[in-house]
Amino acid sequence: MLAAVVCAILCGCHSLRLQQHWLKLVAAPVWHLLGFTRKPPTRQAFANLLARVDPLVLEQAVLEFVEQLVLECPQEGSTKSKSSPVSFPLPEAEVWDGKTLRGTREGDSRAQQILVRMNLALKRVIGSEIIPAETNEAKTAYELVKKLVVKDKLIIADAAYCQREICQEITDQGGEYLVLVKDNQPQLHRDIEQAFVIPRGFSPLPTAQI
Image 1 (tube, helix red, strand yellow):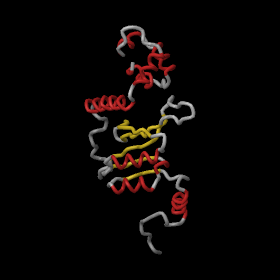
Image 2: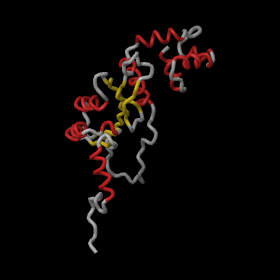
Image 3: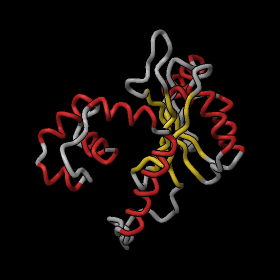
Image 4: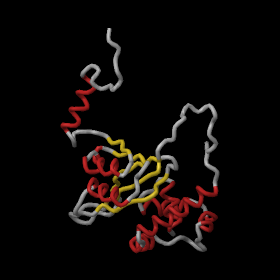
């Protein structure tokens, strides 16, 4: 049943109703490949199953499966070209982003949110962290940076991560960061804009004196 849900999501069906419709559209041989020996269960049966599954356990199982595929399959472009202009090692890059889990909102409470980490080179998710309801994405990211080893890594994130404590913790551990600066840091935003407006103000390179 979980395999059917995953396949339906990969086909663009992100709700139980659409996933059930997808199962009805595929032929019976596909049902057999998914492990069904008879007609697939009802939508309510899928809902009951998903309500009992621990999302962290499921995520770990999927990550281990993907890791196995990566190890078994040759990586495209793994052979380095002799004519490549890049002659220095690039840091291992991770993209961090907050996501809201669909269908997790109950009453007036906030829908469940997670912080997703994606390895840029592998182009796959390598982990996620639940964002507690009493905090926010930035604070969760800060606590996560303190737990992880980010030495020689590049953390790429949006404006929510443009916080002094997050950036400082990354650099203190020997890592690098690339974050967007928007109105969440108004003074810093203005300073950067002015650096590009004032002539020669943005470039550290010496200029020739005429």
